[in-house]
Length: 127
Image (tube, rainbow, N blue to C red; front, side, top):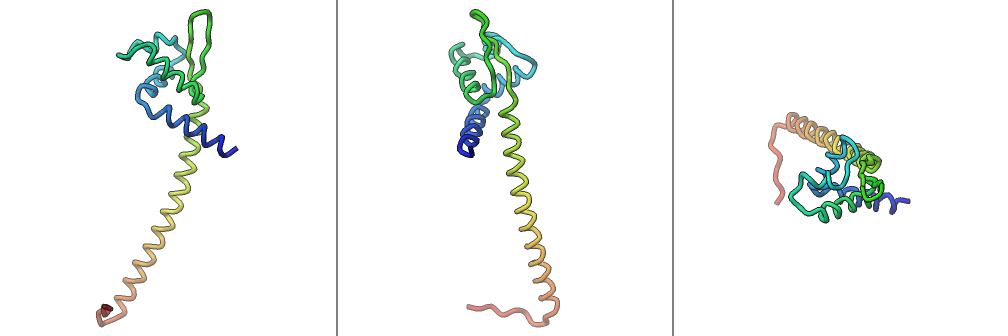
């Protein structure tokens, strides 16, 4: 199950890595659209946009509905929720680790300050 989750996460992040695909998702945030409508704002071929949409489909970020010759694309936010959950898990893990490191450094710093205040002779250096 873990490998499948990692593969899905990889596909989603790969899909989000491209600015054109992110722009397509932004367009779809306001509702489903035809492929030709999605392609209109871009200075690339319809074929190029279709390839971007196929990658978004593989990642599960969009769904396609075919009615005759018209292909309507709609966003599916579930993979975004999975990425957000993964990011939050990473944030919690690293925040905890960094908080522990900060406490350790503060203790060491205050321990060194106390030791220096108590001694009248400077520490000797070993060579």
